[in-house]
Image (cartoon, rainbow, N blue to C red; front, side, top):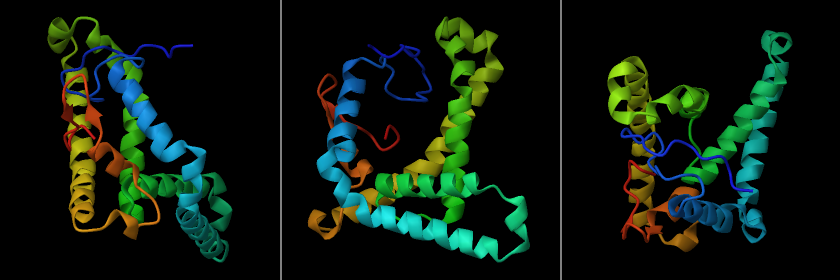
Length: 195
């Protein structure tokens, strides 16, 4: 089945691929993700990343068990943090500090929880900017926050990638696959703020 179509246009580019989920740009991104990250032949290359995330989780739980906070903390939060740490490591190829991971997690949750709220902006884009001004401002702020948080990580990865041999790393981070991804329908590559 074809996934439900998301809003067609968003001048602020919350998701800069403004075509529907089943459009050529989304299909290209899906193929890229499937082939380079989710394919069974690639899973083994993430063994080191999985071990790092598991070790970090176990260390957090051990330190927590010896403190007074143990009885007031949900284990689920620590497991979610470990999984999110693993995802950021696979995405950027870098072990990010906990505060940066928390910031990314909070931002992603804000974006996900706001999708339904922003759907109405695509019904009448020109009129919606005036009628739903507060929603547009919120969307603009979310997009700015996203760029402030993610673009420096993307630029750092791009700079690191230019100075290294690809064979030096145990796996190919997802963001690296997006640097080379060619958008055939637009005859260009993704820009840093689109990634």
